[in-house]
Image 1: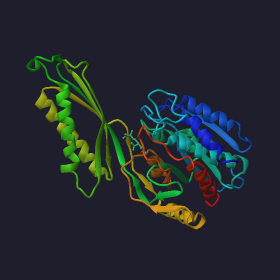
Image 2: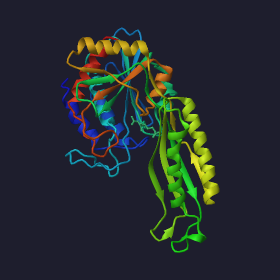
Image 3: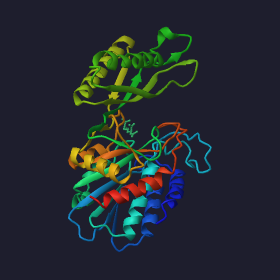
Image 4: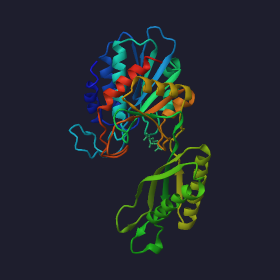
Amino acid sequence: MVESQFINIRRQLHQIPELGFEEFKTQEFLLTFIKNLPQQNIEIATWKTGLFVKVIGSTPSKIIGYRADIDGLPMEEETNLPYKSQHEGKMHGCGHDFHMSIALGVLSYFASNQPKETILFIFQPAEEGPGGAKPMLESTFFNENRPSMMIALHIAPEYPVGTVATKTGLLFANTSELFIDLEGKGGHAAYPHTANDMVVAASHFVTQLQTIVARNIDPLDSAVVTIGKITGGTKQNIIAERARVEGTIRTLSLESMAKIKKRIKALVNGIELGFDCKLSIDFGSNYCQVYNDETITNSFMEFVQKNYPRTTLIECREAMTGEDFGYFLEQIPGFMFWLGVNSEYGLHSNHLNPNEEAIPFAINLIVEYLQTV
Ligand SMILES: CC(=O)N[C@@H](CCC[C@H](N)C(=O)O)C(=O)O
């Protein structure tokens, strides 16, 4: 196996980003590649737009689960890379092209070099939303081939290539999406007294939302409320009848999540009263925290320290990112780790440009680690 071939695979995947549960071309690409591997120890099962690939071990005593997410984000890529996204308005802005090509590299190795233990590769759709992990966990194939431990990685633009960062316990936050629709009364821009302007109402609402973390949450229990998108109105001289506010809530504790939702409901009531309009709230999809198992994570960190002396191993802090991989770890012990990819621009930036040298590095690391488990 030549690990550098997976850089080329990443470039091909990078050009075809697709949104959650629309990963049709991605699934086809993965299937074509996997069907060209030696098949004697492989079992493939499609699941919606995702895949399960089982590599049967020689003398298995357990099943190890390795998960890679496969969806892209709704954003326009603004790099000038020759292999930039070919799908308008979509980009692998969270590195799932890296996650997939690394998983394919590890899978290729074990397809030709039968592992002792059985490894279940999970190519999971819709991590960015609405969430593929939970339904995949409930699927028949997964439950008939249930791993006893789970592993996944996420690229980390802030660390140099050759860096592995993780920690035991809480790694990623609880999340909830947030969608608020505002409905008032539209009208002529010159007659504001005859209308209820939803652009003004939405602006007040977004400003009030900022007070929740600042004034209702214990500063020692981190939380985030981010509004990433506001839409409203139809023309500059028409008072907007409708507006929509879209965001996400992140908390380290479930108590804070409940408190923030309660405060949002109260602020919504206040806006309705104050601006004489109707608001509806949708908390969208919710992910549980990512919680790394202590024993397994420690043994992975020891493995890295002992076998990869030139690797920088960082015991990192928890992050306010979310990941539906948390649902796997809620039921099955395991861990997630950050993989350094050294990009000036971070996750969810349309300039994200991770260093591809991280791909062969990660393939080698995971192949060797999986043989020790
Ligand atoms: C690693 C990462 O960036 N994950 C996403 C998960 C999004 C969950 C959900 N759609 C939401 O926005 O709350 C993240 O934004 O952290």
